[in-house]
Length: 609
Image (cartoon, rainbow, N blue to C red; front, side):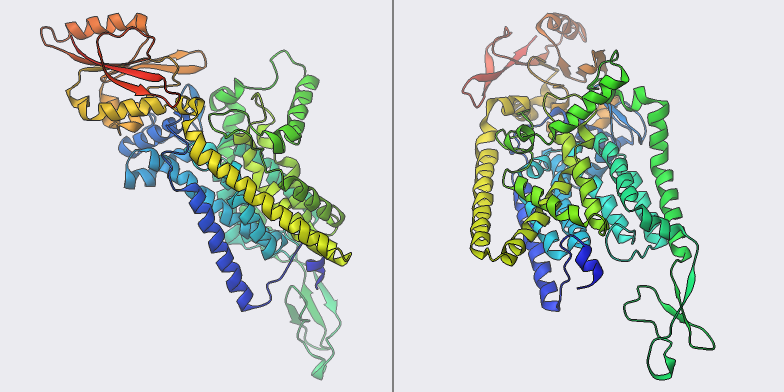
């Protein structure tokens, strides 16, 4: 075993072509499992359509059809206004090709997230294999493929769904470019380095938690591998080496030399180039590419934080009156919560609308595996760059969720670092059997292996049943994702052309104006041509009208009806009301929508004025 293989955490070499084919087959099986858990039934699990999903889908559709977001801003780059906040734009652009093929609907809103999740599983294998060896890469990919947090994250159209992908892509690109994050000799390539820098910068235009995590993580990785980076920056150096023994003094370099040996005339003395300009050019290209892409975004955060960080500014975990010491204490306290048992493996994020309750951020069986992986890494930190990178991934995994409030640690933000925990868990699983076998505890290893397998199967069966069978019928999830309003839109669709107005209640809805836009595939050109009315309501926007649609409380409806009667006069008007059961109805219900709790969710009245 080479020195590199000995110092890398679990580094293994695939010995034969047969083993390579087996590895590829295993990767394909893992990707198939990942796809089966992420793609089927996307419109039904989760049920309904969340307002954040709808905002992304609608803005993307406006861009596709008109080149403007819903507020008329042409091709926004840094942020777009939606719901009252200024949101990142990258996910909206990811939706464009899917909408161009499949139109505006729930499928095209969620399918990019599912595909991104599958790609993240593939990249987890690739990064794990480069850092630690093919077997650990396979284990990590398999663990992520069946991970409940990642499955749920990648089955809905929130921009957080691609957060793990945005943080994993740049590290994969930097490994591909030959930078010294592994224990192999670095072989940087300028062209790939430029592409890696561009990709890292572009990924920062995605979900804000990824925007925070990614620069910290990459900076941490560079710092813990600084010696190798410094060697790449040093000018070319040559040293004389003794000639290799053999016929004629031999002018060929030793087989183990990572860099080519150059013959000297006279005396057969060899010169090995230890440093080349390629490292310097590669780092320069990386820096220029990152500066060109991430630089403008960072500048805007510095000069216009109240605009680009509008949502974050309203949710800091500290108050404006807190001194600096108190703010740092709150940040550190929130950081520590991500390693506490309540979040990490017992309950996870307790916000029920996006998350199935009763499942931790990682399954409980992975916690000891992560701990063992950490134990494997620590003794190798001095010798192994890969071990140090994994340690940085563990320590920084909560970085995207340490500045903003949520009544528990937020799984959407924390998931940007999920793959680091998964890689450490795979490392722990890989090394445990060998550790026990060397101590002649083969029976113990078998018992632990069977126990772990049973725990994985039991936990996965429980999650699949809860998420796909029970959860779609839970009242809080059903109502929180506007599933009742989607049913109303299905009833309305064949009647909409013959209707003069649709008056919908805002009661117990969150930004209800967005749901008909997606459910009815509303034409953005109509959106911009028809009357629209909105106003800020606290930190959110409240839309009260577009075209035929009105979103009004009971006290506001009389004025709407008077206006409809007067314009144009003496013509009967057909008006549809979508109301809660406890609101006064203007006539006999034409349709009642029953929720999963057996209660009337909505009443639809079809009247003529």
